[in-house]
Amino acid sequence: MTGSIPMIRLTTPSFAPRLLLTGALMCALVPAAVLHAQAPASSAALPRLALTAGRSTVLAIDFDITRIAVTNPAIADAVVVAPREILIDGKAQGTISLIVWGDGRRVQYDVAVDAPVAQLQQQLRNLFPGEDIQVTHSEESITLSGRVSSNAVMLRAGEIAEKESSKTSVINLLQVPGGIDTQQVLLQVRFAEVNRQALTEAGVSLFTGVSGYKDWVGRTATEQFAAPNFEPDRLTFSDFLNLFVFNTKYNVGGLLRALQSHGMLQSLAEPNLIAYNGKEASFLAGGEVPVPVVQGNVGGASVTVVYKEFGVRLAFTPTIAGDMIRLHVKPEVSSLDFANGVTVNGFRVPALQTRRAETEVELRDGQSFAIAGLMNNMSQLDKNAIPVLGSLPIIGNLFKSKAARQSRTELMVVITPRLVKPLDPDEVPELPTDPTQFLQDPEALGSRLEGGTGTLDAPAATTRR
Image (cartoon, rainbow, N blue to C red; front, side, top):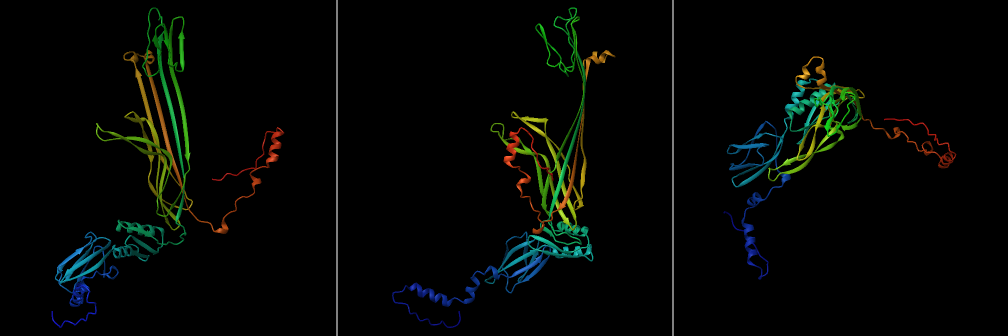
């Protein structure tokens, strides 16, 4: 070390430790530059490097580099290409730290990688020439702003931005002519379901009495419908079907099933939902059925219960484009089906009959569209016959039975979107405050009841929904 050592006059008392003298001398001898290099830099004073994802830049350093480090190579990576140059490659949106060592020094940088907005801006200009579309970005989102000529341009620009930046949310603030200043949509939905059923059954069962006919005792049955059973000294009937004939002279009788039935079921649900622009809203009118789930091996199996939802469900996502509303709609109707259920460890688990649809439509405020044609047709024919006897001409029908079932279920969904327009304070209608319009005078009511009239006069009411 060159140069003279400065003289230091100590005024500490004689009993002060010698350690204090040693520390003072070391502070005077250590160069100020070394102390400054080892001091931690403030995070607010760090130099910042900005680049776009998919692009590269070269960073020049004023000393020979011995080692570098980056916090997250997935966002940006760096490599030394010359003794005093570093090549930085931007890969994904985000911010990382780059630390460089060399020649007894250390420097640190903040590397901020932005989404490829410049490329998106150029792409939108090429696809929509003459449109005022501005693209701005942040670390979490990309914002489209400006004014465009139509709803189609607004929606297409938003779709392109979402495809180009799949990992970043897109905020579409493009304005169109005649736009409405609202960000909420009310969806009025009507579910209408019609179920029609038809049934036809035909069959004959012949039998004799307990004593028989001329020492003959017999019975014919296809087991498709109920037939009498022989017990000691009597016949037992579980069902007389709908035609019963018995001849006491010949001790011979018959049971006949000849039935036709028709049925129709109608159901209606009218849910109303409100959703914010671009956000999904859902509705469920139904319930939950418990489903046991067996877990573990045979020796130590355990049963847990998982609940499955069923009923009338609706999920929709609105996108407001000026005076148009684009809807992504998913209606669904499900019901329990015990006939096709299964039994697990003694639990009867029903199946679910589900009818669903998923579509996208564009409507104006107050317009409606219908989803129809969700039909389920079921036909079933069961025939039973006694071998040989059922094949005989004419009389073979006495040894046959059949049951034909037909069912048809049709679901229709009518959807009407409406833009929610809040009322100004002076537009809020006044509510009725006069109780006499709804409640009669208690004294007058009591006197009329004591008089035995037994009738009450009520004011007319108007129903709104």
